[in-house]
Image 1 (cartoon, one colour):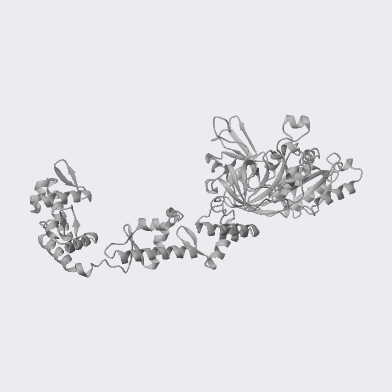
Image 2: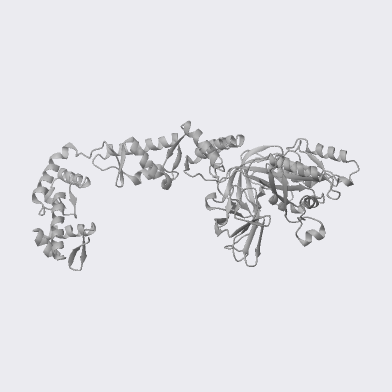
Length: 638
């Protein structure tokens, strides 16, 4: 079982020393860190423990900076941890960065923790030091977190701390696999002979050697050449693993070329797309952070902030629906980003001020591809509120249906970050209640789909009533009536299939009721009968159109016969009976089969007709692919 443990705590409270005492690895890898005794960058170590039921626990440790100047790096390290190791020095007590790290952990939804009361060998009254920390935790998600007195110098308490870590991690829920790997990059470097290496904590899905992946945002393609976990080569990385990935296709980011750097995300193409607008639930903790006056101020509409997500960050503006947000309050809000991010529904974000001096709030992503136009709509706000109050897979699915009315057969992990098991359960419930209907392209909201079907039926019926002599409603007219909001490419074929259950069929580029008959209006019946009789009798020597239909009614009758295909239109002066056309085509095929080719004059003589009929007839056969013209001759195309 693979887990991630992340440290938290004030500078010089002994986080790195404790990590080294637990794992045997000094996480301070930079010379400057070792010289100054201060963690600046993220540090990493590995710890193997045995759980209470003999489980093999492989734990990746992420050691974060405690100095106020490096909180940005701290946030990048704790975004995907299973357990927080909160470090408080017994001789120093609860300090400003202890409080800020607690806020950050809370905003990230991390409540599983153990508190290491370090430097216990230096404390005058260890029991009082422990009680002091417990008082500081009152009213927080960590109020009942176990406190373990330890000393990295003497080894006191280390066995108990390891046992507690193993017990808490053995109770942690398994990592859900939603089918797409997500690796927020926290380090990027090159190795001679290998190319670019990136590291991060893998979540949401598996990653295998040979996989095609993309770098987001930017959608730069790459492939996985090799993978390491705790310095050992593996073929298959799973969620919850510290992972190093060799991606030789991409170079490090530079001024000349977009490439790999901390803050970007490695994932697969089905994950989704980056967005500059997020609907969120915004939450503030009531207690201020010492030495950070900004944490006491209200958040205001259109305020510029810096948000931290995964290992990256981006500037954004807050859009609040009502007034200002005080400490201790929550509200629905929108984040409008300066640069797009790929996020997933239910992801968590930490919000700090633009100067990077204060942690102000936390946010839970409700809609990762939000609409700025919809934010002010009352029904949309109500849907977001419902989603915020009950962030279940069912509520998230209902919210998406309310906006888009449709989900593809393979749902977007960005909107539905569920495992296949969870997804099937949601579909089963919504199908049983008839809230969704299965179609070829996926699933549609039943009420909305039925309204679309009835609209289409009404349009077809009205068209027949207005145009009884026409074949049916042009498909383009239906597309226009449905509008731009209807997902034409994905749903239009399924719509045509579903209309068949309502007695509507597609005929070429038209839709018609199966019961519809293109019968000639009674007042034109006599003229139509006369025209058809004349054309049938005269065959390939018919009168011109003016003589064939000299009156307004006969002209209307002829136009009707042409529309319904009972008379063939060759040009503005010439029409034929379909039987005459079929006979002519048969004679021409016979002539050309026997002779190989013939001139227009030879064909005219063979048909015993005039040039007025022969020329448009041959041009028509050319257009239909029966014959082709080669200079003065005609040949068969087949």
